[in-house]
Length: 165
Image (tube, rainbow, N blue to C red):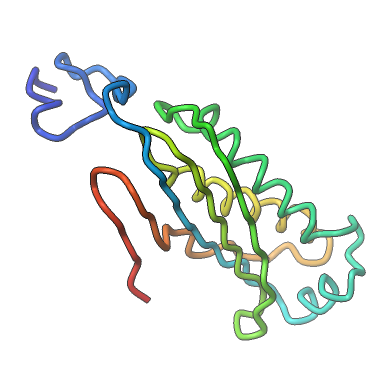
Protein backbone atom coordinates (compact mmCIF):
# COMPACT_ATOMS: atom_id res chain seq x y z
CA UNK A 1 0.00 0.00 0.00
CA UNK A 2 1.04 3.55 -0.54
CA UNK A 3 1.15 6.48 1.83
CA UNK A 4 -2.05 7.67 0.18
CA UNK A 5 -4.13 4.74 1.46
CA UNK A 6 -6.21 6.89 3.80
CA UNK A 7 -6.64 9.54 1.14
CA UNK A 8 -7.80 6.88 -1.32
CA UNK A 9 -10.69 5.99 0.98
CA UNK A 10 -9.11 2.99 2.67
CA UNK A 11 -10.07 4.07 6.17
CA UNK A 12 -8.65 1.07 8.00
CA UNK A 13 -5.12 1.61 6.68
CA UNK A 14 -2.64 4.19 7.92
CA UNK A 15 -0.25 6.20 5.75
CA UNK A 16 2.14 3.24 5.59
CA UNK A 17 -0.56 0.76 4.59
CA UNK A 18 -0.78 -0.83 8.05
CA UNK A 19 -4.14 -1.90 9.49
CA UNK A 20 -5.52 0.55 12.04
CA UNK A 21 -8.66 1.36 13.96
CA UNK A 22 -10.39 4.42 12.53
CA UNK A 23 -10.11 7.49 14.77
CA UNK A 24 -13.63 8.59 15.66
CA UNK A 25 -12.64 10.83 18.58
CA UNK A 26 -13.50 14.06 16.77
CA UNK A 27 -16.98 12.88 15.75
CA UNK A 28 -20.07 13.90 17.67
CA UNK A 29 -22.18 11.08 19.08
CA UNK A 30 -25.44 10.65 17.16
CA UNK A 31 -28.32 8.19 17.29
CA UNK A 32 -27.65 5.19 15.11
CA UNK A 33 -29.59 2.05 14.35
CA UNK A 34 -28.90 -1.01 12.23
CA UNK A 35 -31.14 -3.93 11.32
CA UNK A 36 -29.75 -7.18 9.94
CA UNK A 37 -31.55 -10.33 8.87
CA UNK A 38 -30.69 -13.98 8.38
CA UNK A 39 -32.68 -16.94 7.11
CA UNK A 40 -32.40 -20.43 8.56
CA UNK A 41 -33.85 -23.09 6.24
CA UNK A 42 -34.83 -26.58 7.38
CA UNK A 43 -37.15 -29.46 6.65
CA UNK A 44 -40.83 -28.86 7.51
CA UNK A 45 -40.71 -31.58 10.20
CA UNK A 46 -37.77 -29.87 11.91
CA UNK A 47 -39.67 -26.57 11.93
CA UNK A 48 -42.75 -28.31 13.34
CA UNK A 49 -40.70 -29.98 16.10
CA UNK A 50 -39.09 -26.68 17.14
CA UNK A 51 -42.44 -24.87 17.04
CA UNK A 52 -43.98 -27.59 19.23
CA UNK A 53 -41.19 -27.11 21.78
CA UNK A 54 -39.98 -30.69 21.38
CA UNK A 55 -36.35 -30.16 20.39
CA UNK A 56 -33.97 -32.45 22.30
CA UNK A 57 -31.74 -29.59 23.51
CA UNK A 58 -34.58 -27.47 24.91
CA UNK A 59 -35.86 -24.02 23.98
CA UNK A 60 -34.17 -23.45 20.62
CA UNK A 61 -35.55 -19.97 19.97
CA UNK A 62 -34.92 -18.49 23.41
CA UNK A 63 -31.36 -19.77 23.37
CA UNK A 64 -30.75 -18.36 19.88
CA UNK A 65 -32.26 -15.00 20.87
CA UNK A 66 -30.02 -14.69 23.93
CA UNK A 67 -26.97 -15.74 21.90
CA UNK A 68 -27.68 -13.00 19.36
CA UNK A 69 -27.96 -10.36 22.06
CA UNK A 70 -24.74 -11.52 23.70
CA UNK A 71 -22.94 -11.60 20.36
CA UNK A 72 -23.85 -8.01 19.51
CA UNK A 73 -22.25 -6.92 22.78
CA UNK A 74 -19.06 -8.87 21.93
CA UNK A 75 -18.60 -7.72 18.32
CA UNK A 76 -15.46 -5.68 19.05
CA UNK A 77 -13.86 -8.87 20.41
CA UNK A 78 -14.77 -10.86 17.30
CA UNK A 79 -14.25 -8.49 14.35
CA UNK A 80 -10.82 -6.89 14.05
CA UNK A 81 -10.74 -3.09 14.18
CA UNK A 82 -14.37 -2.71 15.35
CA UNK A 83 -14.84 -0.16 18.10
CA UNK A 84 -16.28 -1.28 21.43
CA UNK A 85 -19.61 0.52 21.51
CA UNK A 86 -22.03 1.63 24.23
CA UNK A 87 -24.91 -0.45 22.93
CA UNK A 88 -28.20 0.79 24.33
CA UNK A 89 -30.52 -1.90 23.02
CA UNK A 90 -30.40 -5.14 21.09
CA UNK A 91 -33.55 -6.87 19.91
CA UNK A 92 -33.51 -10.26 18.23
CA UNK A 93 -36.78 -11.44 16.72
CA UNK A 94 -37.06 -14.99 15.40
CA UNK A 95 -40.10 -15.65 13.26
CA UNK A 96 -41.26 -18.98 11.85
CA UNK A 97 -41.73 -18.91 8.09
CA UNK A 98 -43.41 -21.94 6.51
CA UNK A 99 -42.50 -20.70 3.02
CA UNK A 100 -38.75 -21.23 3.68
CA UNK A 101 -39.46 -23.51 5.63
CA UNK A 102 -37.55 -22.27 8.66
CA UNK A 103 -36.98 -19.03 10.50
CA UNK A 104 -36.22 -15.42 9.73
CA UNK A 105 -34.00 -13.76 12.29
CA UNK A 106 -34.02 -9.98 12.58
CA UNK A 107 -31.52 -8.20 14.83
CA UNK A 108 -31.89 -4.51 15.67
CA UNK A 109 -29.15 -2.60 17.48
CA UNK A 110 -29.38 1.00 18.67
CA UNK A 111 -26.80 3.35 20.13
CA UNK A 112 -25.82 6.96 20.52
CA UNK A 113 -22.16 7.02 19.54
CA UNK A 114 -19.53 8.23 17.10
CA UNK A 115 -19.70 5.24 14.78
CA UNK A 116 -22.30 2.85 13.42
CA UNK A 117 -23.65 -0.50 14.57
CA UNK A 118 -23.95 -2.42 11.31
CA UNK A 119 -21.41 -5.03 12.40
CA UNK A 120 -23.16 -5.53 15.73
CA UNK A 121 -26.50 -6.17 14.02
CA UNK A 122 -24.91 -8.54 11.49
CA UNK A 123 -23.06 -10.37 14.26
CA UNK A 124 -26.26 -10.72 16.30
CA UNK A 125 -28.19 -12.17 13.35
CA UNK A 126 -25.32 -14.51 12.41
CA UNK A 127 -24.73 -15.87 15.91
CA UNK A 128 -28.46 -16.30 16.53
CA UNK A 129 -28.63 -18.32 13.30
CA UNK A 130 -25.59 -20.41 14.28
CA UNK A 131 -27.09 -21.06 17.69
CA UNK A 132 -30.40 -22.08 16.17
CA UNK A 133 -28.46 -24.57 14.03
CA UNK A 134 -26.56 -25.86 17.07
CA UNK A 135 -29.73 -26.30 19.10
CA UNK A 136 -31.52 -28.13 16.25
CA UNK A 137 -28.72 -30.13 14.61
CA UNK A 138 -29.84 -33.23 16.51
CA UNK A 139 -33.05 -33.05 14.50
CA UNK A 140 -31.46 -32.25 11.14
CA UNK A 141 -27.86 -31.79 10.03
CA UNK A 142 -28.80 -30.23 6.66
CA UNK A 143 -30.16 -26.97 8.12
CA UNK A 144 -28.88 -24.04 6.06
CA UNK A 145 -28.07 -20.49 7.11
CA UNK A 146 -28.76 -18.19 4.17
CA UNK A 147 -28.73 -14.54 3.28
CA UNK A 148 -27.22 -12.78 6.26
CA UNK A 149 -27.43 -9.12 5.26
CA UNK A 150 -27.90 -5.57 6.37
CA UNK A 151 -31.51 -4.56 5.93
CA UNK A 152 -31.36 -0.98 7.16
CA UNK A 153 -29.15 1.55 8.88
CA UNK A 154 -29.75 5.09 10.06
CA UNK A 155 -27.45 7.83 11.25
CA UNK A 156 -23.87 8.71 10.65
CA UNK A 157 -21.87 10.51 7.98
CA UNK A 158 -22.77 8.09 5.20
CA UNK A 159 -26.48 8.63 5.81
CA UNK A 160 -29.34 6.18 5.82
CA UNK A 161 -29.47 2.89 3.94
CA UNK A 162 -32.40 0.65 3.09
CA UNK A 163 -31.85 -2.66 1.28
CA UNK A 164 -33.93 -3.37 -1.78
CA UNK A 165 -36.15 -6.44 -1.59
